[in-house]
Image 1 (tube, rainbow, N blue to C red):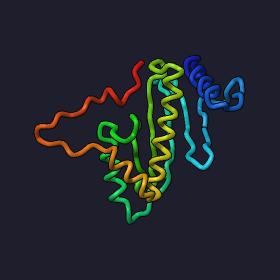
Image 2 (tube, rainbow, N blue to C red; image 1 turned 120 degrees about the vertical axis):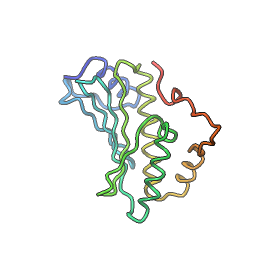
Image 3 (tube, rainbow, N blue to C red; image 1 turned 180 degrees about the horizontal axis):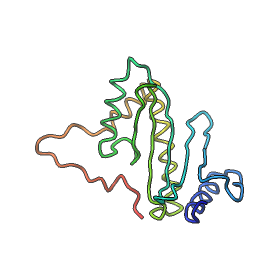
Length: 165
């Protein structure tokens, strides 16, 4: 059974996005948001850890671009510089990329959660474009990625990549 805080977050998302009423009770803790002409975003609740989890399969990439894609993912995951706090991963055996994020349910207000999902969707859509080879998406990634660190450089503060409760 889903926790009340998680159900409240889902209800806030439903209301904000004008989604239809959810069944009561929910058949599971998992909710799939199928976006028109976009990725499917899975929202779930892990009862043991009490974490809200967001997940999306971004798509496949051509084998000949694998090194380029993996380099982009590695640099983007560095302090979450181009992922809005989420983590990119791949299954190289099937050339498929994924985006995932998890946060404690009690750390999120309803407004924070709606904004979190919006940012997650934006990030997933941008990365689907990168995987497909969209030049504009790759240029956007290059502009947003951090430059290599000099010997005298200090690491940026990761606090800007987290929702403040």
